[in-house]
Length: 249
Image (cartoon, rainbow, N blue to C red; front, side, top):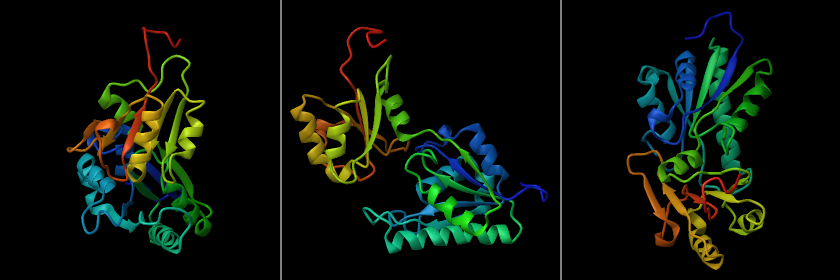
């Protein structure tokens, strides 16, 4: 727990893709130090624990009584909608109330890494607007693309290869553009555009590995060519064709 003489600090804590054993030692230490830990609750999780909450509860069970759910809407596809803005305000207000009540360390547990497509940056901006003197600390976490590469035993990059991370929220146009320059492409949020992705890979003669629920008990690794449908948060690893050992050096 924190000490009374500490400056208030908001921590973005990456808790990895799903497997509690992939939570770092530093993340566990940070979680234990928090007076309050905010965890996102989405439409998908409903009244049940969300993925971040479940990871924290398993990896650091002594902190369960310090967990507080805050809403984060995943239903809106793009833009700063009223629903999204309202959710950010609710989350920021929960952190501010904790600081006003005497907390000096408030954490936000996020799946993956706080710096990779995380809502933590929005939360931090909202809290800083109201508590300008707070410190902000970011604890990195293992990403879905790292976990997918490990599970499929596929190196993300070798030698001088270039890696690109592309969200497939608006279709495959960005992927087609980026793939001209990158050797390996990892696609996030592939579920809504799976057919277009499969068709594109077929035209360029490539296959890819899709990871569903990476790091979770029901983890699935499926060649994209064999996949008819997938949830929104599906990750896909499109690796280059490699020949002999060290050829990319």
